[in-house]
Length: 253
Ligand SMILES: NC(=O)c1ccc[n+]([C@@H]2O[C@H](COP(=O)([O-])OP(=O)(O)OC[C@H]3O[C@@H](n4cnc5c(N)ncnc54)[C@H](OP(=O)(O)O)[C@@H]3O)[C@@H](O)[C@H]2O)c1
View 1 (tube, helix red, strand yellow):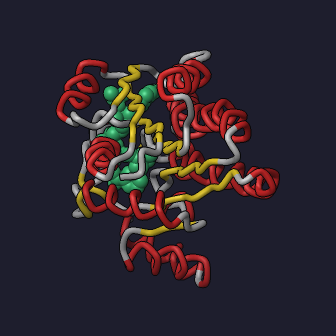
View 2 (cartoon, rainbow, N blue to C red; view 1 turned 45 degrees about the vertical axis):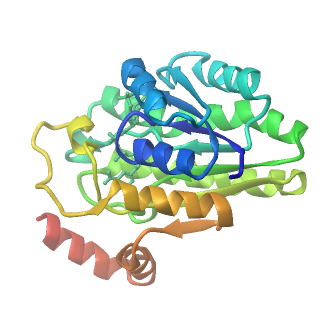
C-alpha cells in the first residue's frame, strides 16, 4: 500500500474509471475529476475504504485546473502523481473540421492538461518532486486520416512535455506518457465532428490500459505502450512513413 496521492482526470468512465478502481485497490489516495459529479460520488462510495476526493469540474473552465490542484493539496496535503487522462476526439475530414470543434479538442486534450501541469508543478517542487503521466494515443505519434485535430492535440502535449522534462529534471519532476491504441470505451460516442463515426473497431479493455497505467506509475518509463501492435505501429510508421501513408489510405479509403 503506497498511500501516494494521485490526481486523475477523466475518472467518471472508460480508462479513467478503470484506473480509479485499480489505483484504489493498490492503496493510492485519489482525487478524481470529471464533469459528472453524481457518477464521481457513486464511484467514490464504491471505492471505500480507499481515501477518495471527488472533484466535479470541467477542466476547460477558467481557473478549474488551479482550483482542482488547490483542493487536492488542501485535502491530502500533496500531489504525488498527476494523471492527465480526460480527453475527447474529433472525427471527420480535417480540412472541413469546424473551428469550434478543433478549439474544444485542443482545450480538453492540450490546454487543460498543460494548465494542470503548471498548477501542480510548484507543489511537486516544494515536496521534492513528483510524477506526471499523460494519456496520449498511438495516433498522437503517427496521425491517421479523419482524426487530424485529435492527433495534433496529443502531439502538441507530447512536445510541450519534452521541453518540460528537460527544464525540470534537476528538480525531480518526472514525466511519462502512455500511448494506448483502440480501447473499448464510449470515447467514440463523445467524439465531436461529423456524425458518421468510424465503424466499431475491436480494441483492448479499459482495465488492461488501466493496469498498464499502474505499471507506469510504479516504473516511470518515458513512453509506454499497451500492446505489441501499438509499438509496432508507431515504430513502423516512423521508419516507413510513406508505406504507412499508403496503408492508411487503403484502410480509410
Ligand atoms: N478509447 C480509445 O480508443 C482511446 C485510445 C487511445 C487513447 N485514448 C485516450 O484515453 C483517454 C481516456 O479516454 P476514454 O476512452 O476513457 O474516453 P471516455 O470513455 O469518453 O472518457 C473520457 C473521460 O474524460 C472526461 N472528460 C471529458 N471532457 C472533460 C472535461 N471537459 N472536463 C472534465 N472531464 C472531462 C469524461 O467525464 P465527464 O463526461 O463526466 O466529464 C470521462 O470521464 C483520453 O485522453 C483518450 O484520448 C483513448
